[in-house]
Length: 292
Image (tube, rainbow, N blue to C red; front, side, top):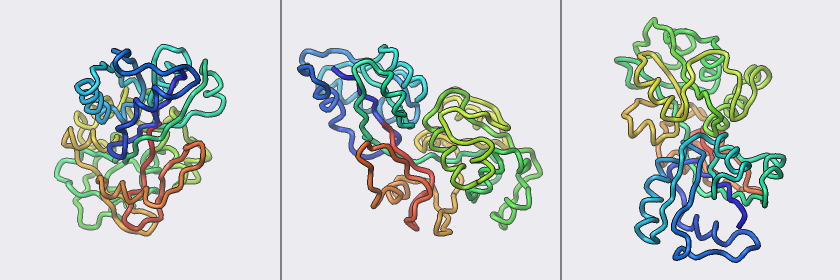
């Protein structure tokens, strides 16, 4: 049976047929759920909140226990290449070279989608507006304090403090980072030329956390901090999220509805390798992607 790289970047969309698809992939005769009693997977922390619920229900319905380790997309891809998992999940689609390194081949399926929220911890500030330039300059270390004139201009009614910004980012190979850095590359020529996009980059500033859980912990534990996590982590941990200006100039909060809007009308290529960044939909949230 061929390995499957599940591209599951998010909190919604159709995932009910995931294991039917995995069982039917490849040239070997598939095993039924009555024969398979345990599966092992690893990868994306972005999609872990969805997986934890989905696999719980699957066990109830089919009697199959699925052990999924939230080790990050980079780790999931490596596990797939090493042959130590039955399936892997990544928010970053695999390159052709990575796919060729997997014994038996890979089937890539975009089966979930969602939003990367910009979470922050500024005491007394419950409403924050950012745009792509501001976000890139914060992560470049050019905007160092919360009361920077550019941020004040975006937030004229907010009482932004004269405090250093504590920047949080992923320390491990991460599909969430892949989405986030691709967005920064679209928004900032300087970011694109000096840092670029990938599952792991050389961060100019900030504290690194392992997994979405690690970044969430940094934000919660450090006042005046900012970071990027899949939306569910912000919701579950009661962390405030910034609103983002989209391509139309509208200020959009990261929600299930605004994420859905970002995918409306999006046409996937035949290999299903795509992102949903800087949407043209005036109601869409601009930092979205798939999980594979």
